[in-house]
Amino acid sequence: MPAPEARVTVAVSTAVFGVRADASGAPRLHVALVPRMREPFLDRWALPGTWLAADEELADAAARVAAETVPGPVRRLEQLAAFGAVDRSPTGRVLTVAHWALSPALDDDGAAPSYSGGLDVAGLPAGVHVRWQRADAPPAMAFDHAEILTAAVARLRADLPRAGVAHALLGPSFTLAELRAVHEAVLGRTLDAANFRRATLATGVLEETGEVRAGTRHRPPKLYRYRPADGAPPPAAPDDPGDLS
Amino acid sequence: MPAPEARVTVAVSTAVFGVRADASGAPRLHVALVPRMREPFLDRWALPGTWLAADEELADAAARVAAETVPGPVRRLEQLAAFGAVDRSPTGRVLTVAHWALSPALDDDGAAPSYSGGLDVAGLPAGVHVRWQRADAPPAMAFDHAEILTAAVARLRADLPRAGVAHALLGPSFTLAELRAVHEAVLGRTLDAANFRRATLATGVLEETGEVRAGTRHRPPKLYRYRPADGAPPPAAPDDPGDLS
DNA sequence: TCAAAAGTGTTTGGCCTACACCCATGC
DNA sequence: GCATGGGTGTAGGCCAAACACTTTTGA
Image (cartoon, rainbow over all chains, first blue to last red; front, side, top):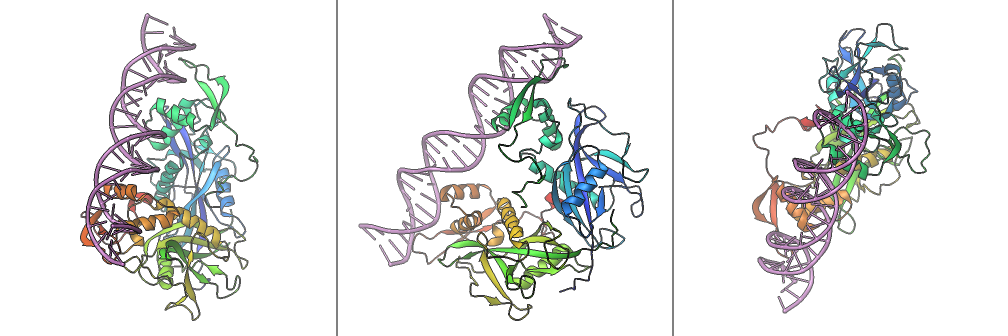
């Protein structure tokens, strides 16, 4: 058995997903990536990350990374897995605990900001440009981050049916078509609108706001919101306690 | 951003599951636990683990732990998650990458060894007694290992429908009743024998060996084996390549 | 002959899918 | 009016649960 002195450096990375409009205006699943500022892999795209401080919780570090990278709130932060292949970094043994999180569309009308021109974000070194990149067709990435991203997308898709996951990608109120567009963007395929409506309403997690979305050139759709959890205290606990406890 | 010198010790633990007969002879899901040999948590039960060597792959370390702990082959080793709460060890920051693995019943007749009397295993310090403990009612455990075990059981149950998971808990040939008993032990509930038979055979992954299990006091059941993967190269890759890569 | 478990057949109901169809609005 | 997407109805298929029933053995 090796001694505990055989040290391994621990990093934390977060794949922040958001549904944003692509060049043609269609909503697509994107992930927030940053260019590497130093060797190795200078200028390659990477998941935002940080070293883990000795007194910092994994989830806190992952949340900090997300908050420093992506404007606006970040929701549903969860751990993905540990990636620790011996040769995954050319500069020495690094174990990365990967997380994933969701960034809601800030606007409430489906015309989400795309950030596709690059965006300086406060708290990062000058010149760092966070960009939303297509999650299903990412650019060449540093280290094994492409592998991590693939796993994160698979996990997001598998978790999509869970209550609140799609919600975390939307604003407080939304039409069923917008909710369906989120599902379609995450899954990468179209869904039957009629059946999606029935299945979603049958779960009972939605309620009508009483308002409709105006300004369309067709029948105005109703707006919905997620029904607040019954009696559950709103504060704390962004994680689902039932899964990893 | 903290410096990489803020070191964190990395450990690897493996929850090895097996279906073994309990005191009444009924097959139950068990997990291999070892008693702590030193403080902290002296004499409490723990998942077998090791420190991660700087040049050792995570999966290799987890497999080594399992092989040194449980007699017989170990199958389907997969990573569960990283557990890294700051205060999870009273002796300093330790991040544990937990894995789970499966130990088949060595016998081919359903009367699996129970090891319930404790068993000295070669390669461990004298006095170490590996014991199969009930996975759904484990004893008091060291550190946060109860939490890890709960997550591992949940993952095993979720993965049970995947091809080969139940197989990894059985010998090379088995009756449908034995295969069903494995499913029932893992899930902790009974299944309808008729429907289980139909559903399992319909998948096409089983084939009859042509033999029957003799010595029962009823009609002798047919023996089955898993159909070998068509043309797939048998070597390497214990993981499912379609999932994480 | 009986008990016990293997193994088969059949019914039922739920859910998912596809798709026809009507509704309400902007232009 | 007409195009467009919102929203409803409905028939068919698949699948899983339930359970009655037959078969084959050891005792």
